[in-house]
Image 1 (cartoon, one colour):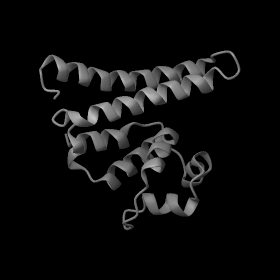
Image 2 (spheres, helix red, strand yellow):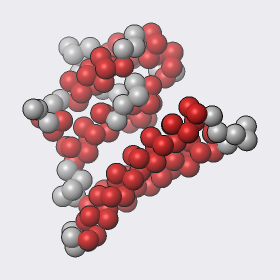
Image 3 (cartoon, helix red, strand yellow):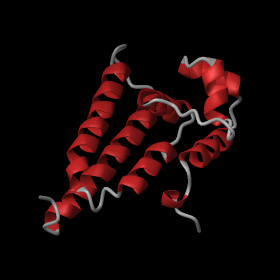
Amino acid sequence: MIGLDQLSFKAVLFIAYQKSGKTYEQIANESNIPLSAIKKYFNPNEEYHPRPDHIITLSKVLNTTLLVDWFVAHVKVEQNHNLLPHLITKELTDVINEMMKALEDGELTLFERQKLVKEVKEAKEILDKLEKALINGEFK
């Protein structure tokens, strides 16, 4: 099986697109990213890549962690623990932001709870990596 570290970002982006089942138009509408940019992002013949904030937005719209997972695979977080605090901050901020949005109306719907569980799991994965690094004396 080919790992994410062996694929190009464009390939992973296209896999995420295919798995979503969404059209370019749906992605553009849901992400507020211009359709022309969406078409360039997913065109294998274009050397045009989404900027970091668009990668986060696309991950949410495509309902995937593949894009972030690709970066983690290439950075090899297990060997470069200096990135863990930044990833932890990002994940915990995502949890807090989702919680604040969900509680705006004073109740948690099933969809909001599911979204929060997803965010908490993502944060927990990063925290587990930090815990492992600390236990093994790998975090400096």
